[in-house]
Image (cartoon, rainbow, N blue to C red; front, top):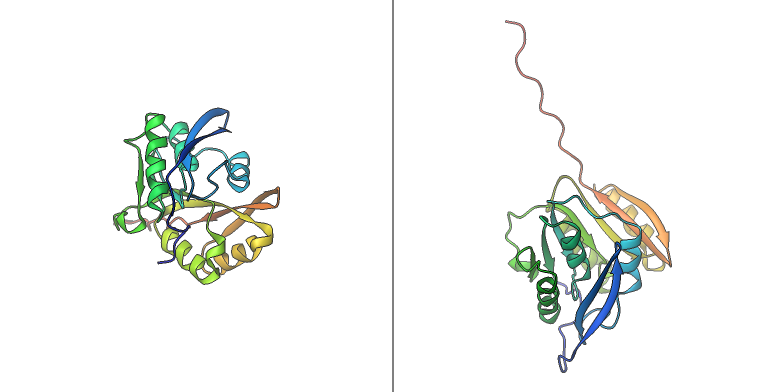
Length: 209
């Protein structure tokens, strides 16, 4: 399976990152060898600024979690929500666990390798700043694999650079049966919402006897 970010090399030298998300101040532990190791990346910042938190009590997935800012913010905004934080980078998973513990959410944020997620798990929402640079084919396989885990009526929310093919990705997903809406644009990024259609209502039974 294609990776999200390279497995880290070099010394695990940790440092702190400060960020404000949905009106809350955070101090994240980060390290070299993970995505955007020294700041909350611009794309993820745009995703937060142009999205509302999910309803509390949701079952959520942070796809390609890095050091965990999305998973941690989702856990803070939803005190009873459960979040799986998936990445192939073991250092990213370690940092996400540290950051979840720091806000008292270690029991609700589960950092995992992709193949550690049980096959029966389904999600109300998927949040992601996806790894566009792994290539179109690998990205398509990645997204279809995880979108298929959405509950009926569920949605995925992604941030994608406009110059990295956000519009063509939206069109492709729609053609593949995943209706995709372009919600907003800022700082060179597009926010995409991908929806899983709810099943049709059950036919009424009974009648005149």
